[in-house]
Amino acid sequence: MIRIAIAALLGTLSLSSFAALKEGEAAPAFQLQASLAGKAFSYSLKDALKSGPVVVYFYPSAYTNGCNLQAHTFAVNYEKFRETGASVVGVSLDSIARLNDFSADPDYCAGKLPVASDADGRVARAFELAVRDAATGRTDTRGKEIDHGFAERTTFVVTPDGKIAATIGGLAPAQNVDKALEVVQAIARTGRK
Image (cartoon, rainbow, N blue to C red; front, side, top):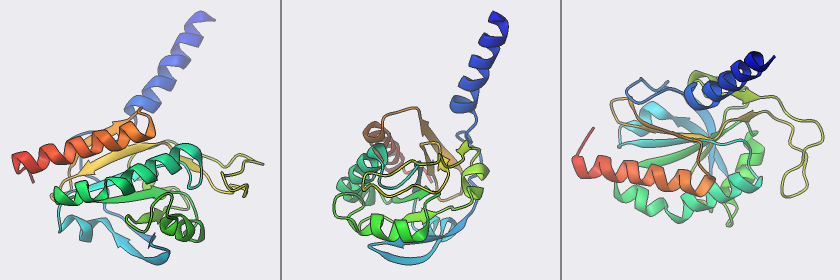
């Protein structure tokens, strides 16, 4: 019985800690419907990488406490990311309608960074992230029902050659942003492409 419990615990740890794509691996190219400042558009990672590194951050759901904090922290620091030549895109299983609101909300994305709708979790799974089904009766910070699944909070820094420079997980939302900024600043200092 104890062996089974330990094996289950180790399995859980390895799933959350080691399942995501690692540094040096190719990032899956993706194209998703996204929103910036409340306006939907087609986002392409391949196109974004032509301008420099891209911070691709997966988060569970718009309008939830941790995700609100993470989006706000990215928005507040967005110019610091741009100074390194990097761009940022958030990805969740939210519908584009929810993301239109979230991307324009002055308290969160504030019209500064795009957020993309991976409604079926296909892109999250391609990055080898765990995706959970929607929990019945769960509501967001606005009191609206959350009717979509959740990807685990993990950030990838992707260099223009399409390779993952860093995989950031297991951190609190604001720390996740700080670590991503450290990585792109280091890339800018070394001139790494």
